[in-house]
Length: 284
Image (tube, rainbow, N blue to C red):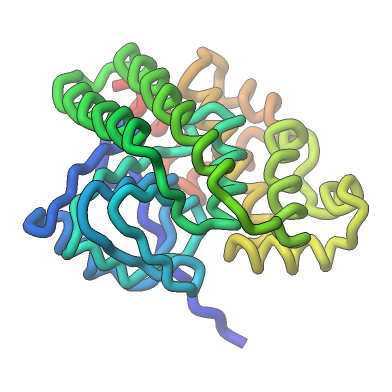
């Protein structure tokens, strides 16, 4: 049976910094374009802060409405479409997992899978709005240099430090068993993925069957455990290429690949770039 492949949008197609900050109003060009996207997934996290009016989007095949004073998250792998924000004003922060501390990433994943929008206090709204404005000005003023990307990384994680306590404390629904399993599985990946690339290992660690792991992760995220393992490997590879002087062969060894040529093929297949092309581009 043939399956329909849902298209992926990549953050690096919109920004050279692996993140972008958008202030959207009903008359913004970008606001109108958002409504034109059919079902798709992003390779980045999207934080949405509604400052005026109301809007909605279909996320993982359910309609999520948001109104003034609320914050919501769309995580990588979540299928979304029918984005309707023509009646509202908002700030949108999109960022690659590479630009986030792991702890914040885990918390956003947990929220996104349980996920109704969270209402913020006026003080928190003011702080976040000012932080978004500052980030927007910072990104407009900096050159595409590695040093400035490090500054941006730190600033983004300050914003996430404000957001994550609010979104988790604002959730009232108990977590489903499938959500708990998926969150635990994704939390294990950074610790084990360099040595363990088979879903069966993670199923055994979680004391469940491989079939059940595949079922709940696919149901919760739209992607299989194998796809998430590949994403985790690529994220580790990109971090090593960005932040170390290791050769491609040494990075392949660090990531548990016996054959560095196979690692290079794997990387290019999933990113459309060789490891060296990625390093050259990211360090320009």
